[in-house]
Each structure stands twice: as C-alpha cells, then as structure tokens.
Image (cartoon, rainbow over all chains, first blue to last red; front, side):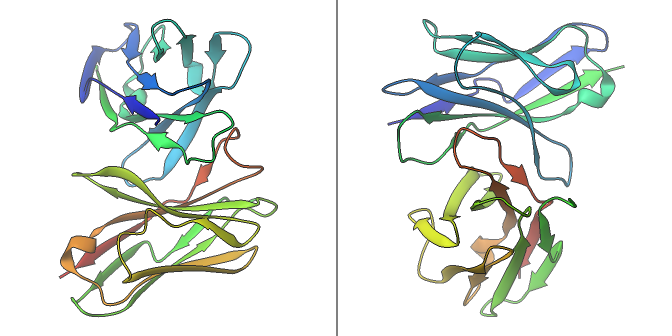
Length: 114
Length: 114
C-alpha cells in the first residue's frame, strides 16, 4: 500500500523567513514524489517532482524539496517566503512500477505573514 | 495551449437532478483524471482514462456516477441523480505518459446540490 502524510494542517511563517512544509510517505518499493500548490478557487499547479537521481529537487517559484529515503520524507522548502506563497500545498506519492494511482496528502495551508 | 478546460465553473442544482461536468484536456495528453475535493475527504481520484479508455474507476463512489471519454479531446462526468453529499469541487487533470509526469489540472467545477 502507498500513503502520504502531511502532519501540519497549517503553517505560518513571516515574510522573508525560510519555510518548510513537511511530507512523509510510505511505499513498498521506490517512490515517485510530487508537490503541488493550490491557490484559492484554482486547480492544483505542479511545483516539482522527484523521480530518481539527485535528492535535492528544484522547482518553480524558488521552491525545492529534499528526498530523504531513510526518513521517508520529501519536505518542501524555500529560503525566503513571500506573501504570495500563501496557498494550500499538497504532497503526492506513487510507488514506481505500481499500477496504483497517485495518492495525495491532506494538504497544508501555508500563510506568509507580512 | 489554454490548459485543461472545465465547464461549468459553478453548478447549483436540486437534489435528484442530473448533472454533467465537462473537460477538455491538453492536446496530446494521453491520460485524463477526474478528482473530487471536499473538506472532509480531501482530494480523491474518481476515475482515470488512458487513450480514451477507462482504466480504473474504483474511486467512483457509486453507480450514480459515470464518466465517458468519447474522444481524445473531451470527457464528461455525470451524476444521476444528484444528492447533497455530492457537493464538492470536481477537478479534471491530464498528463502525458502517465504517472511519472506531472498532471495539469483544470480550474475545477464547484458543484452545489441543494
């Protein structure tokens, strides 16, 4: 079975400070991992993905995520948060070679305070 | 490309009525997904198609829900009869070559069944 957990429903950070949105996953084999962002009244937008290779993945809008196999984590990070980063963030996982669909986390609401 | 296009953006209907949601995927994409988003259950995959063929409909909640993809540029999700618990935001997404590539989401249809 595959699953993904986002342990924080809400993350608040001051503008200019670094931000981290946490994600842990569970798969039997190797994972494909994704981060998406959702702005109000919009669909999800792709930020970045880990398929294989470098553990540090860089994505859109200055975001990056680090794949940590030993901790089964894929935390989303940004060195300096912007007010415009305030949105709902989803982590998603799929086990490689599996016929199963992508499993999304419950989402983390990020609020960047001016 | 204009992205994934969904219509209508908002739909309010009375319980018992038939509702049809529409989706036009990105040209050239061979996978199409229908998701439902609610506060209680988060983002759920309802069904997905590959090359217009339904592959997995195990997420469809019950027989009142049906989906079709008559050609590569059009899909529908139908609910008949609709119930208040069907109220949600329904997203369509498409991708090229499946699960290790990112999906592109439409803006969603907000369905309210009264």
